[in-house]
Amino acid sequence: MRHRRLGRKLGVVTKHRKAMLRNMVTDFFRNEKIKSTDTRLKELKRLAEKMITLAKLGTLHARRHAAGIISDKDVLKKLFDEIGGKYKERPGGYTRIVKLGMRRGDNAPLSVLELVESGFEQKGKKKKTKTSKDKQKSVTTGAPETKSRKKEAAEELGLIEQEKKPEEVSAEQVEPSSDPKKEIE
Image 1: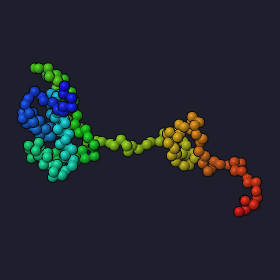
Image 2: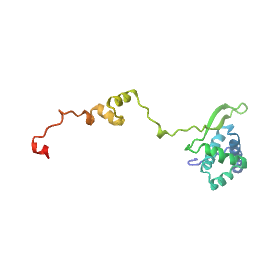
Image 3: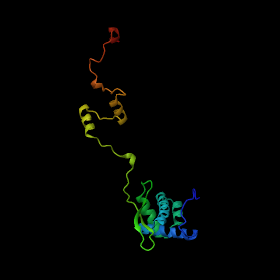
Image 4: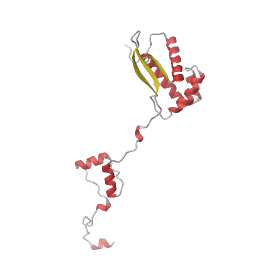
């Protein structure tokens, strides 16, 4: 059993596999796209994502680590100057694998590995748009509506009493005190 065994052997010896992946990742960053079999690209994707993460760091130490894998100096410069800066805000997922179909000769599954576009929006910082119901509430009361959804749902179910604003409290609801001396003080 191969429990917790990371990586694929790709049917070649270790030296050949390492050299092949180094050449493929160099070509991938040179052309920003590469076509090969699914299993090779899945291994290449792991290596390419690590290289882009190093490029995002931009330190000398990271550049030397990347230079141990990428053999072409021009490609290394492109990786650290252009590609690393392009994905500075993106937390991961810099590449995608697109399936192409089967190869005609040996029926091997072919795919393309490519860089994704740099358009990335963080999920936690979306702006909330007001619905027409919220706009009507804020127009009638004159104050912005700041209740949470959970609180509104609890009020609708009758689990908690609705909050009353100071303007809504009428003179009838204010009870006069029974002792006139306390009112003077």
